[in-house]
Image 1 (cartoon, rainbow, N blue to C red):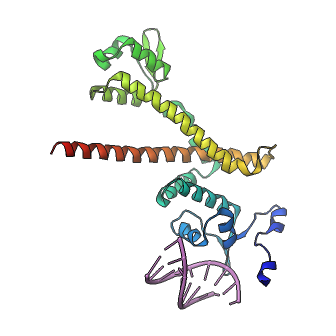
Image 2: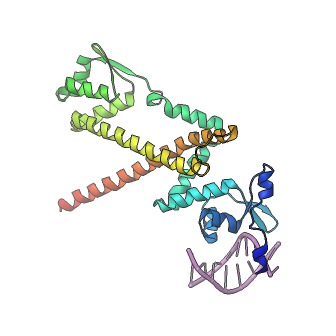
Length: 259
DNA sequence: TTTCTTACA
DNA sequence: TGTAAGCA
C-alpha cells in the first residue's frame, strides 16, 4: 500500500528541464500497452534497443516508448516479429539525417537514375511486334511510362522498357500490361495514403496539429524522411511475400491438374 | 526488498 | 507468453 504513494516512475523534473523523460521498465510497458514480459522478448529479438542501465534498474527513453508503440501497432496489424525486425533495421539503416536525405533523393528521382531510351514509333512497333497499337502508346504516355515527341518515343526507364518487352514476348498482351500498370499506380497511391495516415496518427497525432515549434518541425521532417524507406521496405517485403504465395499456389494448382 | 534475468513449461 | 527461482 505504501508503495502506491511513491512516484509513478516518470521523471517530470527531468522533462521540465528539457532533458529526456525516463521510464522504468514497468512504466514504458504500461504507456505502450504491452506486457513487461514482451518488452524483454522484443529486446531479445532486436526490435527494441537495450535500456540504459543504472545499477539494477533499466531506464527507458521516449524513443523506446515510441518504438514500442510502433511495434505493438504493427504486431496488431498482423506483422510478424521477424518482419518488424526487418522493417526496423531498414529504418535504422536510413538513420542519419544526411543518409535519409540521400535515400529521399534516390526515391524521389524518376525511375531511379535510369538512362532514357529514345526510338522512333516505327522502331517501337518493331520492338513490340504487331500487338502494339498507337492506342497502347497513347495510354503508356498517359500513365507516364513513355514520353511522346512527334515521331520519337522516349522511355525514361530502360529497365521498365525491357521488362515490358519481356512480358510481351512471354505472351502477355500489351493492353493488359498497361492495365496492370494503371492498377499498380492506383494501389500505390492508396498505400501512400495509408502510410501517411499511420504517420499522422502516431507521429503527429498526440500533439495535435497546432503551431509547431522549430524542434517539433525538425522532428516531423525527420520522421517524414524516415517514413520513406520504411514504407518502401514494407511494400517491397509484402509484395515479395504475396508474389511468393501466389506463385506457389499457382504451381501447386498446375501440378494438381496435371496428375 | 525491489528490479531484472534466466530458464523452463 | 506465464512464471518460478536466482541475482545484484
